[in-house]
Length: 210
Ligand code: PRP
Ligand code: URA
Image (cartoon, rainbow, N blue to C red; front, side):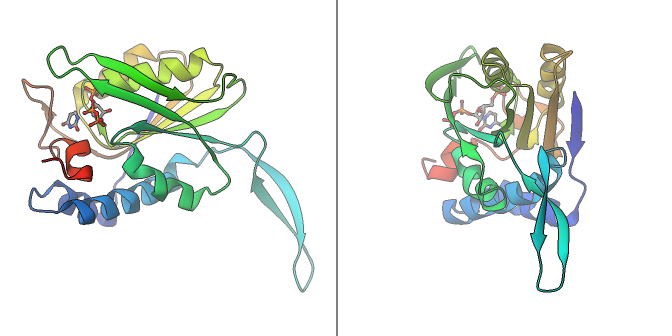
């Protein structure tokens, strides 16, 4: 598993505002989208491309096109939906599929309650969006789901992760082509499975249910 933790003042600045409990939902939503756009730059480093030639007003130019098959972007509902706009702004030709997951707050086990994805993901590159990687249970279930459908590589973009969750994902995905791109790697999980210092419940903060 490849892990990349963003080391850039713009990312850290935006994450700092995002973490602040006084940041209201509209600002939180705007920042989540801006952050995913910045992280997508690294996450798409190995996106599949094909050579193309275009004609400039001066001469022929050889370039690249993000191509066939199109990358599949998978936001994990609900909180991952807050990252979708920022991702498709950067990769507008991507296909989008949805996975709805909720973590049982007593057992901390993930439950898949909705799915709208192509049946056959053979040979597809997938980009999972979920702001929080806490115990790792949700991301592991999402990655398993995509590989079971035939995906060949999965990159997850998460805004904040806990070391415990990152380690769990690493163990569970051994031997598979998995990349995790993070805005920050925090200190730890607390006894309720929340990331410390984290930002609280990402879904609640995005959608104003606090
Ligand atoms: C949050 C978050 C992740 C999950 C992370 O979702 O968006 O999907 O928890 O926790 P884990 O790493 O311990 O599995 P939540 O279950 O709160 O659902 P929501 O997005 O609908 O709020
Ligand atoms: N889900 C969240 O939204 N935040 C956490 O800290 C852990 C799980």
